Length: 452
Image (cartoon, rainbow, N blue to C red):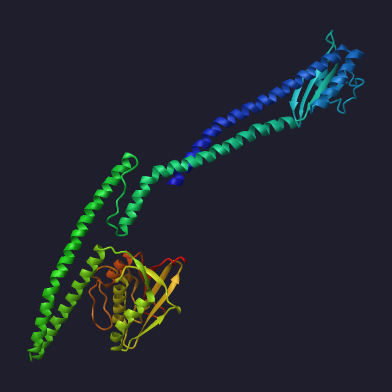
């Protein structure tokens, strides 16, 4: 929008300059040509009067005047007699029989612009008899120089005015569009999940009204979402105690029942209670992740990965699943993340990888740097995901089924995305080489500490 405003402003100034400057320059050009033509005609007429006297002193004066004119001006004087001969002491012109002299000897004054200005004037004696003709040939050098001065000065002035107009237009456009940029910034922050984003009420009345409307809507939406988060957190917290009590009661029932069919029903009920507990815990974690904003700090990624792998190794050994790591030697990259976020992210991702991995499979964890970002890949050897499922994988309560037959709560990847977004990172699902799924986690690299 700024570019369009600046271009429109510059075009308007350029059209105004052209409408004013070009006619003035054309008028000055015509006036200059006319002044030169008038001056040459006046000089030719004066010399023709000397030639019309037809005596030796006048001819000597004409010769001196022609010589001085040729010395002081770029022009050249040519004189012929009525018989087309020379007028001593002046030499005869090379084209004494040209149309200019023919018309002059017939009593006509001729003026024409060709490669030069040609002005030819007849010399009439007192008895109106034509005794000769004078022609001045004036080259366009001086005229061209003056024209370049006229047009060049105006061209340079026009370029300077357009440049100043462009600078002023850019400043004006930025000032006019500043409220819109602030509204865009507020909308971008709001779409990224920052419900506290508000736009300053500045600019013209229209943008002020729009800013007030957006701020009011944002406050209302923030209130509703906060109320929803509080409800989810409270409900999840209140449900944890009865679910725990219900699971303990089912365990006591299972211990005191000998009937195989009743025991099987109790085990199924216990499994559902466990699933509900996981769902409630996931809702509580997600509500806290959305409601709390903690400051990110530098953390050693490989140390966190090694710590979480040490916890999940036991679960993998039960099914013969191996964990392998790939990252450059050394202390490893340092990333910006909130304390505890990466632990929860890795727990959810590794849990999902174990869920879909076949017995005896391998889960690979890779760490690498890419500019100012650090990339963490978790690759499994499971069945992978079709594109449609990848698009829904981060939706809440969407569940996939692993090879072990257990189903999740549908909140794991939603929690992962929320935690990473809070820390300025991202997560994406890709096809792993050779089959399976690759969970790519992108984190902000911590700025290197300055020495000293």
